[in-house]
Length: 267
Image (cartoon, rainbow, N blue to C red; front, side, top):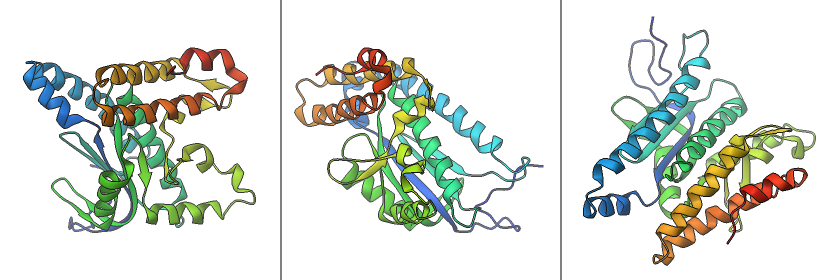
């Protein structure tokens, strides 16, 4: 028996579900397509994109089925189209905190895997009633996440929409000391006050285990992007923001100073 899709009722009719919902796209993909066309490298770009998306799809599909209730229910749904990825994660628990943790983990791994291949994601993470089906996505979280991606994210980061932040605030209230909450590692507050997904944290497996090779590959990918846009100041500023975020993350590991220095971006 196929796992039950949470966005359809028992009669197979589409329904809206309270969900966390992410909308993301790849920074600079339109310009990359134009450049590839001019340089006759469209096949190369296609291979790079499909290779990265297939790797991400394997992780997303595996987590979706492995987190199911004995294979009877799919925990979330996702859709890839062109340079976009959307993920809908319906609420099964009353509070939604575990679902938030799961979708954040998925977004972290997706961003980190893509970034290591030079494909940097930006987007919005919303909350509310939404339907994510095989042919259609409907609901205010889609509009809210899309608006944040277009108008707020700017550089490669996934920014939380207001409704998602309200849920995070609610979750933090469950802790006697909010500094103990995992959200303090999963999320960061940027200089403009926006809260975004701390995606390099995916390489922080445990307090004493860090995948430094992944962090080094992330640094190398940022440097390549900076080199490729030396004459494009607006785009370079976006990758410079990623580089600064990268170094901020490395700076969180003062006890691993030698590794931090090896994997930090040097301006």
